[in-house]
Image 1 (cartoon, one colour):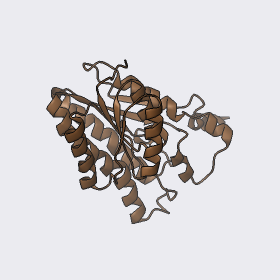
Image 2 (tube, rainbow, N blue to C red):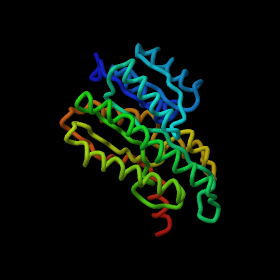
Image 3 (cartoon, rainbow, N blue to C red):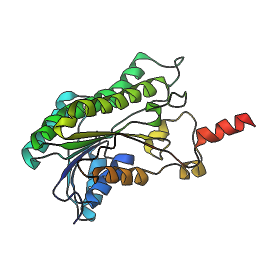
Image 4 (cartoon, helix red, strand yellow):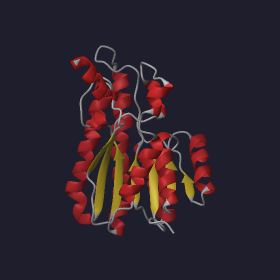
Length: 253
């Protein structure tokens, strides 16, 4: 029996990458998982993986930039499953046009909607369910770009992810008395499909040296299995061979 047996976890951006790995890791610990993302076919594939290991998965596709769609998933959780223990607030997007010279208003809107507003909507929908049961955990996927400003991730993505970090800490400030814990996870380079949006393609060797989605899934499971009196406020996880550090060393030589 896993440490999360009898619990319910809602994972957004669950169709691939960190979300997929988190769903499998939490299911291995016994949690029933609710999988949300835009593409139902991808979610069904992850659900099949969860069921193959003996887990329970519910597929609820939704556009998380739409508050009503987010609330519809939360209503399903409350009415059909009766509780929400963990929200993995993982959905996110990036675009190729990242510099101020190239950014267009519609690109900025896409970044803010997909990285910040979606995270807010999910947190807001989850809070009543967690308050009702006297506690819960939120894990938000931000980025190293949410802590450090760099041209690599782009101005819009960096600004949105900084806001996600602030959002998470504000949840702890207001909701700790309700037994609700919020953790913001700030990964460095992770080998996920979002890398396909990079202006410059990476080699197989570079990709293999990055943090892998399964590493982040294991971290999510670790955070989720900590006792309720412990709040891990923020975590940074990066590759050992950190390409930013290596580039800095080269410039100094």
